[in-house]
Each structure stands twice: as structure tokens, then as C-alpha cells.
Amino acid sequence: MDKPGNAFNVMKAEDSPGFLLWQVTTLWHRAIKKALDEIDLTHPQFVLLASLLWLSKTKASITQIDLSHHSKIDPMTTSTIIKTLLRKGLVERQEHETDTRAKSVTLTENGIAISRQAVQIINKVDDDFFTGLGKDVKDFNGMLVGLLGRNKI
Amino acid sequence: MDKPGNAFNVMKAEDSPGFLLWQVTTLWHRAIKKALDEIDLTHPQFVLLASLLWLSKTKASITQIDLSHHSKIDPMTTSTIIKTLLRKGLVERQEHETDTRAKSVTLTENGIAISRQAVQIINKVDDDFFTGLGKDVKDFNGMLVGLLGRNKI
DNA sequence: TACATATAATATGTATACTTATTAAAAAAT
DNA sequence: ATTTTTTAATAAGTATACATATTATATGTA
Image (cartoon, rainbow over all chains, first blue to last red; front, side, top):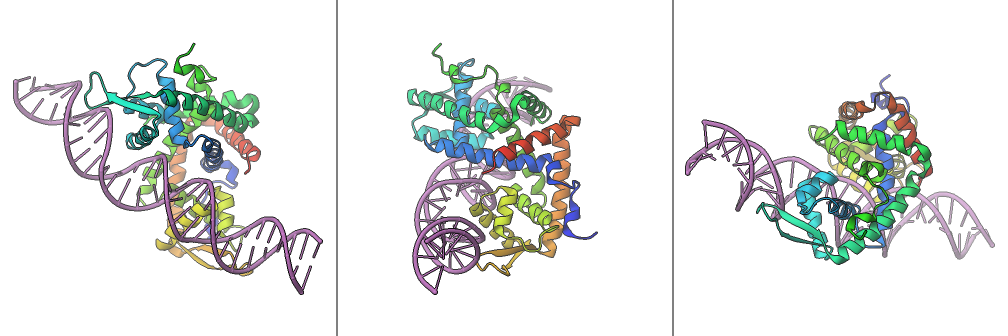
């Protein structure tokens, strides 16, 4: 009764959503990373580019905080990644029209092209990765939306 | 029809399991990181310690590759993290009995204590985080297990 | 208007996470 | 038995991800 293992509250690793989520996302990140290598983007870079593409459908001026909120990437990391995207010529920054503290981030022409390409690549990776869920994907999405709603930070 | 946004194959972000998974795991990682701060562990460090605790229930000699396979953390990263855990005095390494290339990793006494404490902390964080799923947690786990099975790398 | 509080962005420092390449030894193949 | 192929571990280099602290500005309140 005093072996190291008895610290767990589950008998099988498959009963722990946390450990399963760790394993699944580790494999998923790896697959995405590999696919994005082809266009020299990292996963977080892609998330910010896609967020820009997405938000620009409905919002005129997008700040780093907007991107941070949408992507859940913390503001500091967002700042770092945007700086890299600037260096790559995929985004540009201009002064915000009303808030002088903030910066408006926009995609460059090349940024739009790369982002669209990246979205296609990720669509395919995700299609492959989540194929196993079949019809359950709706339920899966629903659960994730539920978790998001209950764990807003 | 040529605005940036039309690159997506979903109309709502809630229809993309990939984006939802990104958001959920980002928030989840943040919550775990914050909780583990208290005992000066990172999430990956915890995963390896818990893996050691778990595997030692059934396996006499545990190598870094064993840990890598179980945790899905790649071998190089496993090596780096184990080195940190060594420095912290939470694990020890000895020559493997039969394979001279490999190293057997074991928890120190303090490592066992810290690991158990960490497991309790994470149990609580995960309980809180996944509470929203209610009875669905079984289905959620099942889907994750399915994804794991279909995406072995 | 003046002051306290909240917010946008970022410099700094530590710890992943991975790629590529290397070393040494085990396993498989002929 | 010798050669070929895998495999365990890791060095080096790049890019997150976060906490903490700082700067400058916006917002709320008296």
C-alpha cells in the first residue's frame, strides 16, 4: 500500500482527462508543427495570423490585445510573436486611431497569401487528426466550447 | 468574396475542433502552471514525475525512452527535463542493467514526496477545470483515447 | 480638474519543444 | 562473425510561454 503508484485517483491512465489531453495535444502540436514547417511558420504564429484573418472579417482595427483575447495567447507572448511576424514581413503595425497606447496590426499582402495557405494546410492536418471522431466531432466541439465558457480567465 | 476571412472552411470558430483545442489547452496549461508554481514545478516536469510514479507501479527499470513514450514528450526534451529534475534532486540516474546505452531513472525520496503532492494539486486543478463536462467526461475521455489510437506517431 | 486605478505594450530571464547531427551500443541480417 | 540498421541519449540553436516589472496612456471618480 505504500508503493509510489498509489498517489493517483484513477486506476487507468485512460480515466484521466488531463493526462489524455496532454498526450493528444502533444501529438497534435507535433503534427501541426511538421506541416507548417513547409511554409516556415510555427503553430503560435499561425494562430495569430489566422486570428488576424478571422477578426478582420468583422473588425476594422485590431490590436495586440484583441489578438491575445481571441487566441488566448498571453499579451507578452503575443507581442513577441508579432515582432517575429513583422520581421518576416507578414504583418505591419500602425498607431491606433484613438488609443495611443495600442497598435493596430494588419496583414501585409504577402501575409494574407501565407495565412490563407496556412489555413488550408491546417484544415487538412486537423481533418486528418480529428477524422477518428467521425460524427462525434460535434459533441467534441460542444464539450470544448463548454470548457471554454466555464474556464474564462 | 475576396475579403481575408473567406479562407476558412467554417463559419463559426466554434466549429473548428483545432481552434477550440488550442484555446482550451492554452487556458488549461495556464491554470496548471499557476498551481504548480507553488511547488516550483513546470507542467512538463510534473508530467515526467507523474509518469515515473505511474510506470514504477509495474516496471522495475524505467528509461528515458520509456518516459518519452508514455508522456509523448520527445526524447530530446525528455533528456533536458530529466537533467533539470536531477539538478533539483527529485530523480536519480543509474546505468541500465542490460542496455549500456540507456539510463535507469528513479525518483529520490524527496522526488516521491513532491510527485505525490503534485499529483494532488493537479487532481484538483483538473477536477475544477473539467467539472463543466459533468457526466460527459467519460465520452470526452473516450474521444481522446480514440484520437490517441488513431494518431500514434 | 485632479487623482487613483486599470490597461496596452514590452524588456528581461527561465524552461520547454523541436530539428538536425553525433556518439555509442544493441539488434537484425547476411 | 561481420556488416547493416536501429536505437538511447544528447549537444546546439530557434521560438514559444509565462511571471514580474516598467512605461505611457486611458478611464473612472471625487
